[in-house]
Amino acid sequence: MKDRDYYLKLKTLERDHFICQKCKLEDKTGIKLEAHHITPLYKGGKDELDNLITLCFDCHHFAPNDKEGFDEYMKEEMEGTLTVLMKSWDKVRKEHPELIKKLNEEKNQRLKQSMLQKASRGNIVSRAPFGYKIENKSLLPAENFKEIEEIFNEFLTPNMNLTQLSKKHNLSVNGLKKILSNFTYLGKIKFDGQIHQGSHQPLISNTLFNHVQNKLKEILRN
Image (cartoon, rainbow, N blue to C red; front, side, top):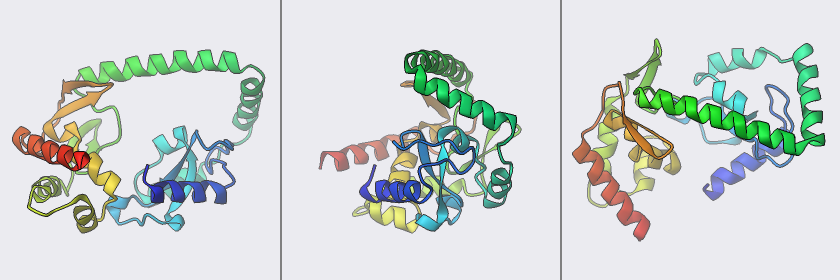
């Protein structure tokens, strides 16, 4: 994680008292919390404190990508019986950590197996990457899909570096790296170190992708 990314996350969690602003889960370690961008960076959102909010992993995973949908999502408060159950569960976690560890391991294994099966069928197991959208459970090219090929080609131009390219396309350097190394743009699905043929349309060629990987490796070596 870049120093600035870590600084912004820490400042967001401190401001929100290390509490998920959706389900009210508290984690003073910050391990189970994320600094969520209210308006995504690829939609013009700023990588600044005013555009960040603390969410736990689960609430972050299900949070909508648009601000209007996110505002509605945050209004759906978790209270009543569910809140009581969450507090009871928190008590069990504190008093029986070994049991919780075992349950989490079993849960993660089931989730991993389910996601692996989904990936092997060519279906995406995460959010739609930049340049794609999900409609009727299918991964389709978004309105900005042509920007992906532009980014890959521009990266290969002489003297172009990650910082310059990220600024040009209003992305963070870390976000740009993820785009440049994402197998999804080849029409494939990568999960748990395995690569599967996807059911979606590729946005770039294998040749272009491989050239970009070579340049990325050169940058890392230097």
